[in-house]
Structure formats: structure tokens, C-alpha cells
Image (cartoon, rainbow, N blue to C red; front, side, top):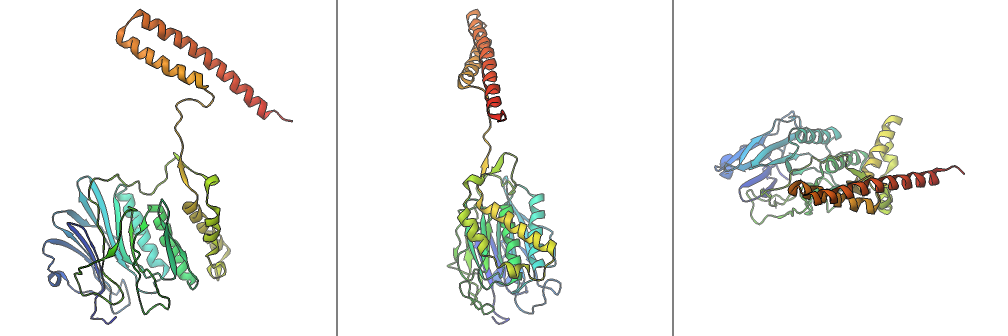
Amino acid sequence: MSPTKQQYRELQCSRCSILYTGRSICVFYELQLFDLNVYRTDRSSETSSFARGGGVLIAVHKGLSSRSLKVNGTIEQLFVLVTEGANQFIIGTAYFPPKSTLDKYSIFCETLEKIAEDYPSAHYYLAADFNLPNCEWFSNDMCSSTIPLPGATASEVEALQVVTGMCVYHKLFQSNTIVNTCEYYATSGNILDLVLVDDADVTVSRANEALLREGMHHPPLEFEIKMTKRRPNDGGLVSDGFYRDFKSADYVKITDFLSQFCWDNLFLGKTLNQIVNIFYDIVYLAIELFIPLKRYSKRRFPPWFSLELKNRIVEKKKAHKKYLLSKSVLDYQTFSQLRANCKLLKAESYRNHINLTELYTKPV
């Protein structure tokens, strides 16, 4: 693409627009964005050594409360906090030139992690040109992940691991399925423009109307941002009430996932400690993707309570409540009898539990 052509992404809803422009010039008057608050990160010598393209822009309708967030300025990235009622939305974008180094992707992921700490209940809508070819994206019920394809370099594999780890941690879904064509890469059908959101129902489509002249390699995209009342995001963190159900794991998919990695290239030139860390990162990632997460069921009674005892306790509580309301002697007698019966059943259940425990733990 020549320096005079423009690349962009357009993501629209009724009152909010996000677009990425591929040249570092003032576009406010060119696009007539008078009803929008415009936030920009222009290309500089600090962010890139490339002479063409670059610079990111987010425009938000003035009817919405919005402000830019202070982030690391060594890469071309931009994050805006949009507030609608009680809901918070993190709108983000970035541009990574072809063959960007691993540290660039790490900075982006670290930035998002810091934002998630500051705004733990916010929802994420991120659109960026990641320029990561030679991979295939797929999703499960929790998030999206990517598998490197044959031809991926060791540095690309490492970058993909970082981006996938970000998706897993924040439970993000890669919603764009529209491929790019680019002269930088020999393979075709790459998805370089990623749309990462925490809503699995978001659909990305090619925009019918573009704010800028359409570029050859990057079509304009659009999707809706749901700004109605939504359940607060849990930040991707796993609470103590969950566990990994290894019995229900999909070990065929785990095997296929691990077989996609070119281990020789991945470990080439690495120290033993680095190799171990890379290996564990991939294993932990496989666990996140293919070992289902289940919630512990909350017990209302100790595990050794019999069914009869549980039913009597429920009846006793009802009888006690009835007595408190009526102050009737008859109701009190009913409650008292049930209470005594519960004590007997509790002692019996506990004895049975101890006997069974001793039976199954007695040494041979």
C-alpha cells in the first residue's frame, strides 16, 4: 500500500464509533467528526521506525461519557473508557507493524491487565491490526485461542502464546472471520485484524459504508456494541468456588493442540529454564482451554447427613417458624418433638458414617 492510501477499521453502534486510520495526520476535519470526541495516538519515532501507515484513533459520540486512559506510549495503542449508566466499556485499538517483536505484544497485554485491575467490572471491545499470520483461531464456551500453523516462525509462536494467554485470562472472544490479503505474507487467508470482545454473541461483518476510502488489504469492519444493562465482567478471574474437572477433559483436542507446536523451533537457542517455562506455559494454556471449569455445589448439610435427617431438619425449621408466629402450645409441642427426633437421627447418621469410614479405611 502506498503512503497516500489509508487503512482503517470502523466499528459502529448507534452512538459510538471506533476507527483505526493508517496514516498519522489530522483527520478531524477530513472526516467531519464534529459530534464526536476524538482520541488519537499518532505514529512517532518512539512507537515505530516504519515510514508509512500507523497511528490509531477512537471517536466516541459526545452523548456518551468517555475519556482516554493513560497507557504505555512505546507502541501504537489507545484505550478509552466509555460509561453508559452503571456499565463501563473499555474500547481499545492498536497497530502492530509486520514482524513486530514479542515485547510489543507483551506491552499491549500488560496494558490490558493493568486496565482490568483498575476497572474490574468493565466490558472489553478491542479491535487491532495484530499482523499475526500463520495461525488458526477457534473458540470454546469460555474464550478464543489460536493454534500456530506450519510456517509460523518461533517469534510468531511466542507472540501467539502471549495473545492467547491474554484472551484466556480476560475471557475474550476473537469475533472477526474476514480474512486479509497482504503482500507481506506468502500465505493467503490470514486474519490479521482481530476483534477481541468479552461477548461471545458479537458478530463482525464487512461495513457497507466506510468513513475513509477502502484500502486494498484491510476492509472496513463493523459490529454493534451492546450498551444495555449487562452483567458486570468478572475480570477473567477464577474464584475459589470453581475447580477443573479433569474427568470430563477432551484429551483428543489436547493431543491435537500440543501436536501443533514445532517444539524444536520453539526451544531453539533457549536455556533450560526458558524451555521449562515455555513448556509449562503451553501445558497451562491447554488446561485453560480444554479442561472444563465447574462450580462446587454448595452443601446445605454435612455429607454424612441421611436423607431422612435432612427432611426432618426442614420440617423442624418450618415448625419453629410457625410456633414463633402463633405462640401456640400445640405448635410448640410439634416443634419440640421434631427437634428431639432430629437429635436422635443426627446421632444415628454420625455413627453410620463413622462405621463406614472405618470399614473402608481398615488396613488389610
